[in-house]
Structure formats: structure tokens, C-alpha cells
Length: 91
Image (cartoon, rainbow, N blue to C red; front, side, top):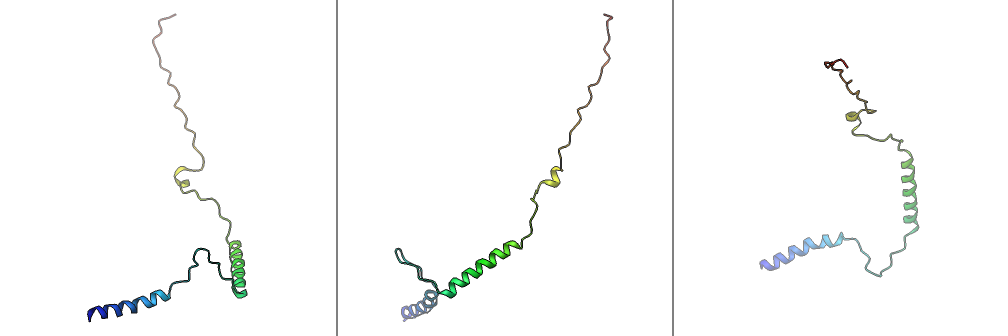
């Protein structure tokens, strides 16, 4: 009796799962032709996408390390060579 109950429960759970699968074309099988409404919907969606791309403002390039490195490299001045007085032997 338990085996029958398990089989019935499995069948009830598998039914909706199989119904949700989309028909996947097999190898060599041709795609179905689209209806004129589907073709028009695709064209409208493509036009809307192209219009939405035009609404995006131009952005300047992003430099995430800009605040760390600064705008221009700073030139460091080499310390002036110290003149040391050496005892001269009177040339």
C-alpha cells in the first residue's frame, strides 16, 4: 500500500513540473515561424531598446585611484649638495 501511495504522490508532483517545460527543438528540427504579432513585438522592443540607449548621458572616464595618486606627478627637488669645507693644504 505504501508503494502505491508513493507512486501516486510522485505522479502528482511530476505532472506540474513537466507541464512547465518549454518545447526545446531537437537536432534537425526547424524553428516554428513567428506570427506577425510576434515579429511586430520584437521590432517594437528593439526600437524601445535603441531609444533607451540614447537616454543614457555621456559619462567621463572613471579613475578609482585618482584621489590617491593626485592629478599630476609632483617633481621632488633633490637636496642641494652640501659644500663641505675641507682643509686645504695650500696648493
